[in-house]
Image 1 (cartoon, each protein chain N blue to C red):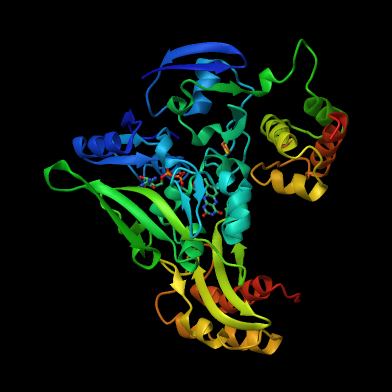
Image 2: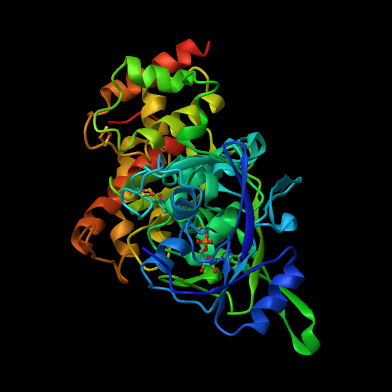
Length: 154
Length: 294
Ligand SMILES: Cc1cc2nc3c(=O)[nH]c(=O)nc-3n(C[C@H](O)[C@H](O)[C@H](O)COP(=O)(O)OP(=O)(O)OC[C@H]3O[C@@H](n4cnc5c(N)ncnc54)[C@H](O)[C@@H]3O)c2cc1C
Ligand code: FES
Ligand code: FES
């Protein structure tokens, strides 16, 4: 099926099999490998991207679902060479170690702060329920989310 | 993981969906895909064709009139959790929606897909049974005429992963009675920490006059193939003051309602689920009545 998807502002057109997952479209067709596949069973959140501004697990979404939509991956957050406030906060607060979960974490926090600009630590933890990190123990991820909220004026 | 090959049809109306279902043997509807895509990837489901109904605008959204909340089956858990109207006229639904899975599951998963899939461990079947919801279903009758029927929750859920939906039918609306000011509700869920699905859950709707319970609807989920109405608990609550002793005594009655099949699986044994059931019922009654408890 022929689909057209805007990824980080750039249009991609491709003829894909209906069974192709969105994450494979992003990594293999668009060549954007910042989005990771962790569990492949919709548990871990490392594949989270924004579809029309809403976070989705791209391993549990078909590429054809994204037809006509606008996707933001981790590669699309920085603007003009300047990191997004959430990326900046993850860096400053050491919210990552191996980095495998980070793209999904950052995109999830971005949506969380849009819905709730001034979350409590508990609300951040609830908001990150679908994102698993095997390295950090989460403390610095929560700190990073709270720091980003502050930086964004929440 | 890759699904087996399937044909894909995106439809824009219920009529088109029904026609596409009829035209393709072994076709399956897809809404948010959050139950179906995992099954396709594991190849536990191998439909020849998928009929993507996610774009049917008529099947999305919430409207409220004097007596009823009308919910389109394609309404996402997130939309229900964030709806002020739902929070006002049916707070149990807002509570349940907000506890499903995680934010990404709530963004994509729909209430209609949830009840049609009818996973015994999912939350909507339990809650909607306690709320006495009605399910509006459309199908095709003689001479290709569209036929609509309405089924009560008690008849809609027929077993594990099975409902009264026919192969060529579509759920088109869920109707939930508006709660009145005497009614109070709560949902208690013992969720599995890795999957977020219910191991045991209890949905409670009670009417109160002062501290006295005048009506009760108590339904358990997660522990049997389909929602279980706890009629013994309901009976024990009605007419009683909601004191700690009376609540404990009523909750203990739940064993009478679990005479049928209680599931044991990799998440919990049947024995464990039977033991947890009265605890969750008690939690839900306390929360519904607005009482503090330990
Ligand atoms: C990680 C994870 C955690 C989850 N946690 C929970 C949880 O805690 N509690 C919970 O309740 N659920 C949970 N779920 C399930 C989730 O709520 C699903 O979204 C839901 O069960 C299915 O809805 P869907 O729109 O994704 O349906 P789909 O996957 O698209 O469809 C499911 C089934 O319903 C049928 N169907 C869909 N719409 C209709 C319709 N209108 N008429 C007739 N048939 C239809 C389809 O043919 C299919 O058989 C979880 C899922 C995941 C992946
Ligand atoms: S790879 Fe998608 S949720 Fe883990
Ligand atoms: S930083 Fe390694 S998984 Fe999170």
